[in-house]
Image 1: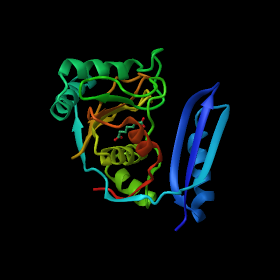
Image 2: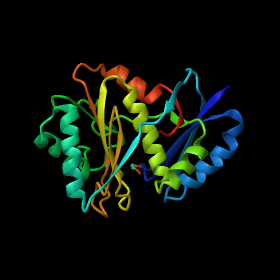
Image 3: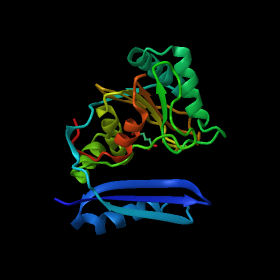
Image 4: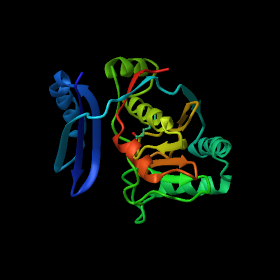
Length: 246
Ligand code: PML
């Protein structure tokens, strides 16, 4: 079956405001474009960029996403303390270092204090190793084979379409042998749920950020010996299709 990757990005005065992407068969392109347009154009923008490309590489087919574990907290500070303990176990980094990195995500991790476009990459010495600290790295080319089915399942559990996107992305990330964990909070000021992903689970933390905070982003924790070029290539170019949620 011939597959196409569809990517829409909306921006305002040169700044990214919203984006979405799908991998679909040819006959679904038209309908997908209209769905994505409605979604992306709902935010104020002066430019929308649409890219439709045939998927050249054979996609990796994944049976199930990471399993989700829900964790509820009284406040985001307590939630982050738990996230830090979990990340310490997986990465071996000190609580102090993890707190420093997470605080940076909550306050804008780009050099000018704005949000990075993609994820920060941190090795197990605690060093930031992304090639460009404004851009970071963006995981793309991942989708569900039957997105409607998966979204319905997640909505029934009280989760959201954003959960579906984040779960797909984290599942792709954890396929890479050198990525050991991920931390994520949204840059939406009202979307307070975030997550920590490990090879075993997608830990869904509510709330992981302070209400009203417009800052957000992701940290990918990677092994020290990682080959950065092949990591970027995998995250940005290897197509992944996921069959179902665990
Ligand atoms: C969830 O609902 O499971 C968390 C989703 C995090 C979304 C991050 C984002 O969309 O920016």
